[in-house]
Picture: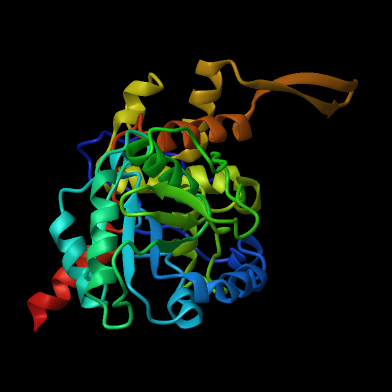
Length: 333
């Protein structure tokens, strides 16, 4: 890894204004289109009254799978933007307006870890199903809801959170910090007694094509694909670029740097030294092999990503560029 080394003051507007995107094979990051999962979802649709789509609040406008609408048809639809505790929501109203422009009129922001805003979900589902002309039914009806979304956005966590809130019992769906925990459409899981409501958990399904490399990098930062497929150091470099663009410099204090930097090699070396993450490498010299201790850049990159994902570097809005683009377009009209 060799980038342009420069340690810059946070007050100097010398950051990279774009990220080098050429040469990245996005198709390798997101192999296949997970048609098997979609097929199983479609076969279960006859049982489903409403769809809850869960997505990551840090990327509310990008990365959603357009095949959900095409394959699963038009049904009462609730978009749950999860992990709001990790997102910068200072422009929340613009996000809502943008989503409404795409036809998504029912959106709830949640944090399933702390059950924040979870109590809004079942009343909202009852409302949108009851107001749909397709679903006028008798009283004491039971509801079956399908939970969909791309990998690692919190679908299973949402189900467990609903059970805690409404049934006062423990988890029924496995959760984890990596994509791919849920492998198949599960049997019905009860989440409420009044109204009687069951949810179907489903595997995460990515879009068959990612619109751009930068969208792919945003999805990777949010953990929707296994890190090694993209490369931890590439992701760490994009993270550093993003933090500097957003003027988020908590990484300086967190890792004890003297100043903010735009050079990922310098930052990762500093992290590795601070955390004692080194590795022995054999170097061939004129007198034979010599063991040299070098910083472990991959280990440092993993720590950088883990620290970001835990929220220790501050809340972020990775779709800020899209929001700004929409604002500029509206001003031109």
